[in-house]
Image (cartoon, rainbow, N blue to C red; front, side, top):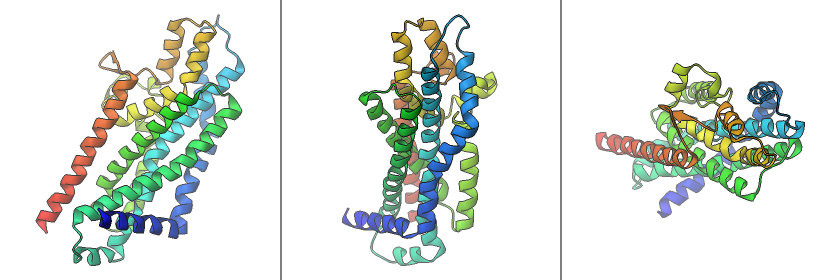
Length: 298
């Protein structure tokens, strides 16, 4: 494993050495939180208020806190996946500049080379999204803080799962690419579309029944819901403390995608975790098989 760690260290140094790539990866969460707060806050606030019965009064602080938590959860769920496509650029750069030809004639196996790409992507993405998490927590603190230490631990766990999911997904998609132009095109498509199909830009509860059924088959849907459940956990506890009926709290959870259903059955948090872990394992196996098949072909 010494060669894997050496290659991983080399890939991480290249990421930090490329100021343009580093800046674009670091600035992405900042841009997202500004855009989300500017353009999506009103949509999320309206979605939240629409679930409140007229006879029930909720403080502005609780509403602002709920909106902030939903914004933060949406940002993290998108950033954890899309940033991996930017961070994973080294794999394509090595092909484009001919470095992979030197690796191919070295005694290091292709499996170790691609494992090093994957591990460096995970570590660099965790760094970028760790900064994004701190920004999000600061925003939530300013708007209305109801989280406890356990919530933050679970959010970090969710972030790790999503980064692993994004890293395996990006490794598979980027694997056949040979130019930076191809990667740029793929990254643009993923950045533009992922937020919609995972329910980050707009709650899935606002979609039609047919689209909701289709999205219920995507693991990204449950990854986003997982972050929302833990981000909004303190909000729901505060509602229960104020003696809001369980039916009202459940209505909030459905409106904010914290209570997703698959074929009419509620998918609980533990099941969402299982779905994400299973998806990471399956994508990891696909990535491994791609490497092994190309090794045999060559």
